[in-house]
Image (tube, rainbow, N blue to C red; front, side, top):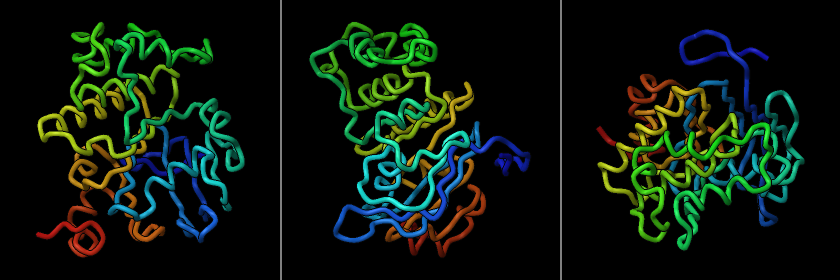
Length: 247
């Protein structure tokens, strides 16, 4: 399938979500979500806390019990797949909590991520470490000895070990100092330059505007806006009403 890309050309649709309705048994959290990511893009899903951002990711991963609609990845319907089955399709996920093993070194954290992977797609540990300056310097440091920003880089690196084509990041800048936020932004841009497609879930719209090509704004479980960085930045009504950003 060929659809739009940020520069107006056509490209392969990597992830397509159509008419997604999802919930946990006490009512629907998401209602008729439509979202599309082309290969090579960085796409953001932005909204306030509780808007449905994480539930959207969890639905893609197969972690939400009640789902209808269609989720397809590389043209294959993955709507009913389990978490392990979905990840095996080539999707990597970095949760907000990071989940670094505190008693293991950087290299050992990455070695654990390699276990059970598909040898044909798994990236070499040294190759991944070389993508991150701070991991090169701290290769033998324990996870517990690393700063929040360094742990976030390690979490991203661990996700990349699988060789996935799509990297989903859930609030990667949450709780980080501004200068570390800039480092995370630079990392996302660099990884995208190396061919990795990114779905960025963010509450911080300024981060999203800095790194993403296309933006979906979600509010109370519904997509209320879709546009480019320039379009979103200029739409003060959307920025104010749904993202709490005033001029």
